[in-house]
Image (cartoon, rainbow, N blue to C red; front, side, top):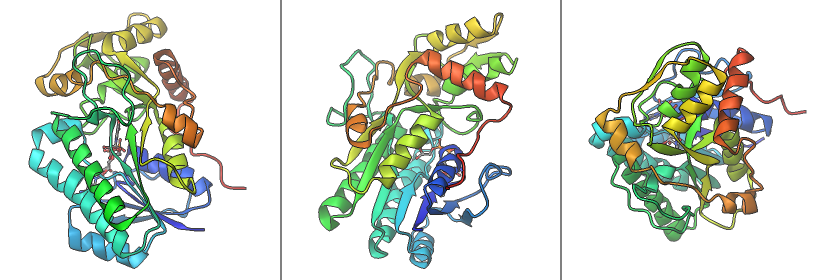
Length: 324
Ligand SMILES: NC(=O)c1ccc[n+]([C@@H]2O[C@H](COP(=O)([O-])OP(=O)(O)OC[C@H]3O[C@@H](n4cnc5c(N)ncnc54)[C@H](O)[C@@H]3O)[C@@H](O)[C@H]2O)c1
């Protein structure tokens, strides 16, 4: 059993990835600056937790020096809406925190580091061909800027020290329970989940605004494969399933929940951030080729159906079974 440290491990993706990596036989340690009550309820016993802030270089060096993990999945970050509101904090956590984690990984011989960037490095306010990993990236949104800067630091550690660093660019994650947080993209779940739970929903972006999307179970599988692969031939992998406008998701939801109350009241920050993603369609052929990753929920209708099924089952999240 090898030890994997997941930073930001108390969050939506971290807790789910922890369960998946436990299933693969890893010893999982979660690091987060704070763990929400109930965040770990769905995990099997055995997962360890440490409280710590990735923007604190000394503390992170100390923690990683004490654990000496075989690998790290670095998820800790603040998300898009909060980044626009607090650019200084975004720089300290998303860029500085990534640097501190990479530096501590290097000093302590971590064999592999997976870093989550984001589809937000692609911006396409006007139509463009599908975005692949080699295509242009020049984000104006603060979140995308910090993610691209973090990627550049990954490339530095790879170039200078030959570290095995793998970068994921996930699309906006859809899955029940992903309501809170500072993401300008959290409407992509809320517009589905709120009406399915019988509640009215006011969407903070316009009907024609869109986002690249991925179902949470598909993303977790992609991240797990990226982490667990012995080697990968590329540094960067897109992980997205499809793209949809807010209006399209609302129509799909209304087909399931007749009379669903969904209104649109664009707020300036969400509209700015998401407006810049309007025409982003991700090309994920590389992840399919190198990781054998094929989303189980490849269309907007599949995402809505999957949310409905999960909510009907009465559980937001079922951890994968224990290793045999
Ligand atoms: N959710 C999405 O749609 C999405 C899409 C693309 C990329 N990502 C990336 O995936 C990663 C995980 O996202 P998520 O959806 O689980 O978000 P989340 O907000 O649920 O989880 C992030 C976690 O990081 C922690 N964190 C924040 N600042 C920290 C700090 N200074 N030190 C330690 N921990 C800190 C938070 O407490 C939180 O638990 C992030 O890097 C995010 O940018 C997310």
